[in-house]
Amino acid sequence: MTEKIVEEGPVTTGDKEKLRLLTVVRGETLRNRDIYERPPGYELFFPNFVMKELCVGLAFLIIIFVWAYFKDSPLYELSNPAETPSHIKAAWYFVGLQELLAYFDPYLAGAIIPSMILAGLYLIPFIDPDPVKGIGRFAFKERKFAIGCFLGGVAMWYGLLLVGWFFRGPYWSFYWPWEDQSVVKATEVALWSFPLSAGIAFLVCYGTLVLILPAVIFQNFFFRLGLIRYLITFNLFAVMCFVPIKIFLRSAFSVKYILVTPWFNI
Amino acid sequence: MKWVPLGLVRYTVCLGGLSVFFFLLCILTGPFLMLYYVPDVNRAHADVMDIMQVVPFGSFVRNVHRWAACLMIVCVPAHMTRVFLQAAYKPPRQLNWLVGITLLILTYLMCFTGYMLPWDQEAYWGATIGATMAENSPFLGAKGPFSVLPPDKDIHYIMLGGTVLDQPTLSRFFFAHCIAIPGALAGLMGFHFFNIHRAGGMSGPL
Image 1 (cartoon, each protein chain N blue to C red):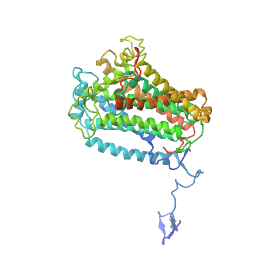
Image 2: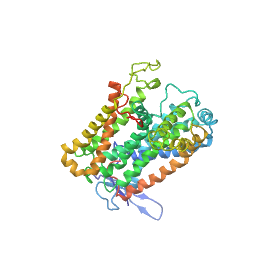
Image 3: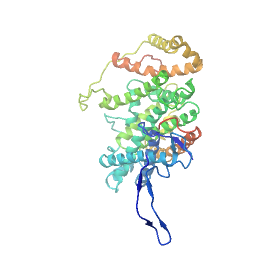
């Protein structure tokens, strides 16, 4: 849309030159005009794109400044090694791991499971058999298994975090939101463990189910992955699914351990 | 001339860019806190009290540092989720995915070490939980299954600089939080951006 506004009369810029403004044309500024050949649908990284990012940053800077002005970051009393508080919580982003400690031994909750999560994350580019599908867009339908597993894991991480943060009171007892967390609960629940043979049987059945059944049912998927990638993928998958299973067994049936050995317990 | 697709800044609001922004905010506020903070178990807590109550704008600077770190630890995993959902780890960006996961780990470590520095009850016992986990790790921890290392050589000892949380622990957490991890983060971030450039730009909205 161009629009002409005709001005009358000369515009003087000094004694030597006399210029006359003939017209003012409404259009794009010089910077945005195609002085360089612009690919359609693209913009310059600098300054156009960087400027937009800075604007988002600026918005968040204002939010942080307001937040920092009104809300002080917490500082508790001086540490005292002799006095364990009844209400210890890790920093909120680690409460998910702390919540796992309620169901698993520390070597599992603190070492094995986090290592498996990180190993799984590192391995993602190498166990995904498809090199092109869905790059640069949200392709939920084409990548059901990959996206399902990933979002399942993310949901579990944040789910544990929320339970740990909002539903755990003194001595890590479970409190519903309507229960008073200042009342200490008596948490003497008798826990029992599977006998050794039952534990082995359970784990063998579970392993068979998770490692072999998918290969039988989804044969195309199995051949596309190949044996090694298949085994890595489904071992990680088995560990991921084992976490909610153990949580369920502990909460519903008070199972302490599924497998008890002299060296380690699961 | 570097051209990028239009409409990159969207409602997945440049989570990667925001992570960098929050990191920069922490880098800018951190040194001011360091001026008033001494990593000594007898002084640390009182120094943080001073920052909060006596030092001009001390509480404001500490709050910005803290809340920016909180937002960073929200943004980094969210950025990773976006990258996964848009399959941006696929060729030619595999290496950058690996660098990204390392950055995620470093961000968590940054927060863990920083949480410890005020030396208050929350910090002390929070770090104790972390230390217990290290102590119980298989092979590397003295109390874990299949432990091969004695208590004065295991990963717990290396982490704490002793068998209990004390001055050596605070000293090495201070070093990790202020020098080692931010240095590694900054270097790897540069590499992360260089890799974006090398792979021919971003795969989709930021």
